[in-house]
Length: 178
Image (cartoon, rainbow, N blue to C red; front, side, top):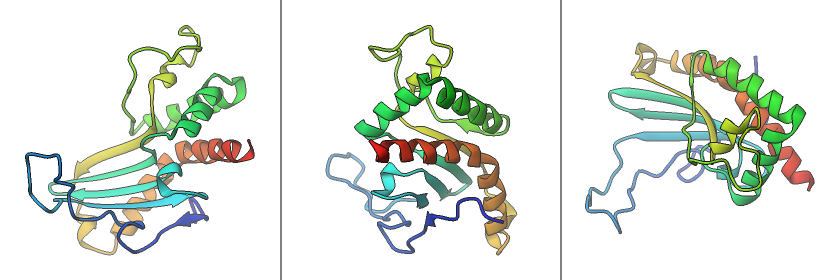
């Protein structure tokens, strides 16, 4: 079974594996290393941060799994907002988000007001308050982490979150056509 056959997983630091060193230049905390493991597998052309993907974050005592795009670049944000208010694309987003939100969290609101130029009374206006779109769950570290069953565990969660990933993947395709 496949979720995203075009997923890119580069088993190297600054590929799929996030670096372990912290940027301490402007921080009071000069601890040099992160205390978590972050792995991101993305689908699409271009920089990984501009593609939807699957995120694995292990930081004792918790495991966080998620899908989506953390922060939209300016062109992606523009397409996202236009997609939200589009009758077909907006409804598809709401359908995907409702399906995923039955078991998982949907991102975090970033803006307090609907952006200028968009109707604050639009039926999907709440989605205009996001600057990225993710679905995620955080749980205490499950027993599967200590065995090869972790792959199946992650696959099951990612499969349930996949409708949001698919919607974002289609949105990215619309940006590439412009």
